[in-house]
Image: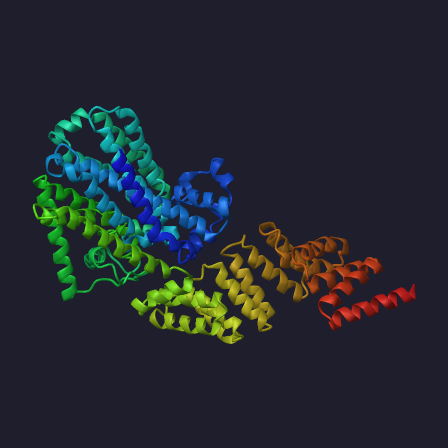
Length: 634
């Protein structure tokens, strides 16, 4: 018991040391959509109150983010602490699985005395390995690390369930439960029951056929859980018909399969030489080349060796199956939008590391001071890898730094140029952002989102005609996006083309009739065009979707003033003043409404406050003069 506790303490210490500096890292890339802008995580009560999990993508991942949000809002540190904890717990489980396996009846004689030491070495190297930073430091990929935790716990509890002399029911219940939780986190865990079956084949006593008959309750339970989990995920899976049809992006199934030869070879290189890590590879489709042929030979050879070792029931065959079966969900013939992401190696890397540890153990066997040499090698490997992980974490310190790092390694990645430009824009470096978008469009001219974002920075730079052209190109490529019409209408309005702006905003409502931003902008331009009744109608719809928007409340008040509905205007102008303290426009229009209602003293107070905020404002000065004239007439 004590060696196990000390081993887990060592794993935790190593994990904390490697990832401590990740606490200062920012939300990047898909974190913005899946966490920062995800309305699902804003209410923990909604999750606890019976949300329909079958209609939510990876609900357990989103629920975990909702917990983080409830505890600390959008402070990234809380999200990072959670991710590190999940990773360390997975390290504990990997240690437990390796130690149980080496202590099993089949391997006990050869490895039993070294089980704890070898399992600790494997877990330490895996926990601090920089290849795993994408599953730990890149926050939205906690779906991968959480799935990994449930995957490992499924296998660990299965092993415990199949161990003679133990009460099987609690372990069986745990096996089924954590597998289902894993399916609610990420679909890759779908292979876990098969891994349990292979574990039985390789490491449990007796032939598999006899084990299946003897343990039919266990296997029927796993089969039922697998079917239930797949059925529960069908509504989510059906959201991606293009993937199921093999029509994703640039990859047909044969091209994707060929591309994966190079990707898998690259993954394997990163396990042994973890330099050149990249957030977003934008891996190009494979073409016939010497590199592709060599990569394909490597992968086919490893697959053939795995089949041969499996036929002979050699333990290394299990590691080959572990590597290919888990990775095969994303690295097969079924095309995904992106061919390569490092987080996909999160679990598969453990098999490679375990095999490497076994090879080192075999090489050192019988040599003088083998134990000391093993300790020295482990300490050196863990120290080096932990330092590389800490260095890699620094690349995630901001959106700009991670994209600059990506571009230094993948200068032809148009998405990296666009994302770097977006980060520059957020920092107020608009001119540099425009240059980044131009480079992204040079690489991929038919990217609607990049044209739209380029239009936004051109608008900020005052290049209205160019921004208009950019928005039109975005709409030509993708006419179904409401925000593109919003950009187009805003540019037209700024150029004084009111009727065209009204048409653009109205067209946008045809793609998303509930968009409060479109209703707001349409209401403003209608009000300015002398159509206040239509403006009020649209501004009302905008407020229905976003009732606390200060600018919409202000514009509603102004439109109501134009209609002569002064008392109604007072409410909205008061709300605008409340929500936007220090607004000269709100104070001035409140004064106008009160003046029209004959409440001259109150009106004068608002005009004077507006003048304090903006001394010399001509409109306010004229209104104060009007008040004085009206007071004199009385």
